[in-house]
Image (cartoon, rainbow, N blue to C red; front, top):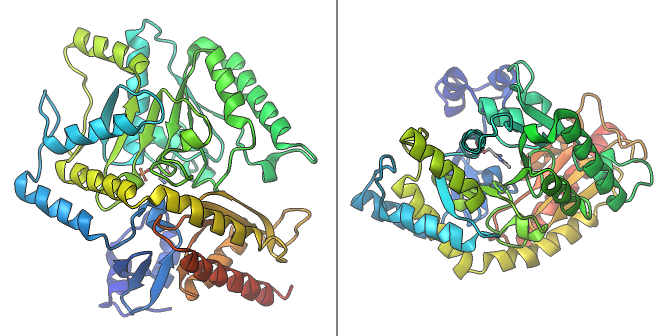
Length: 456
Ligand code: PMP
């Protein structure tokens, strides 16, 4: 499609380098330009309406048109549009939000540190844990383990934690001291006939072997998403977190739960850690914290993590870390209002009931010629599309079939995302069963159309 140079699409092509986009292809096809949002829908500038099946970027929990969040932002803008948290300064919204987060944490937490994105939060965790190891007289304890397919962000350090090839390739990453262990993708990576439990046992053994090879005294922490999101919605196999945590405890390695996608209800509990019995020492959250109306992220640390950091800051004279906009009062006020809405409207219960319906509808597609596997928990799911069900293979190159299905869905008014061959579903938490039906019906029609185009 060609776009007039003075159209929004043409001007975007002329001036805008896009995130996570093939820049050459963008010059040919241009952007979808969103104009307004309404509940679970967005409208583009040509008046077409789409169900946002990904809640934007796994994030707009309360939907796209919540007036209470707008009002909260305006009130705070008028009263105190900016203040910071450096050098013993604070303000009401950041105090309220820190207290609120500690009060709803899945395990006892001590302090909250505020950042602006998931990447910055994970980057900060890595720095704080280095600082802590130095404080504890364990300067060798600085390595981090994350997982293949894991997603933790895109800064130099957090992209290193991320275990996806496109985040490393040509960026000369990962940096030193970040190690990757096997991913818990049962359908793709289990041996033939291997049960979920046996697979989990094998993954825990892989982790232990890596720790022993590197030296347990050199490993500071293990980072994991309760459910992997951007790696393709990978649900941990039965007994996985129990077995992984047993290994971490054995070698005194801290657990960092990256709840950037799972946090605030997505898996049917307030936290993915609760759904999967995780007891993290550090918890990272963002996205649904403010429904992404404004950028904000946070990390919570327990006493074990806080105490040595406090001592080190006392020894040095300051904790030499912080972002100008960290704990921004307007973002914090919006986050507080967003959490109030999630609680008052029982959105976590909605995630459970409507999520059960979503999972049932996705399961119902397993007989389709192009469906290899469906999986999910509560209101997050994925469908792996294949050409050959037995061999679990799709079109060459990887992602071509997934991209075809996603683009056919977009034509039918549903925006999803393919991560390779996994088509993801992570709609706003306010979605109804009827809207889930519309979304899955459009997906099923897209599968039929893809099958027809491929002559299968
Ligand atoms: N962690 C997880 C689990 C994520 O899903 C993401 C973003 N998709 C991030 C970290 C990074 O967050 P951001 O894009 O805000 O830097």
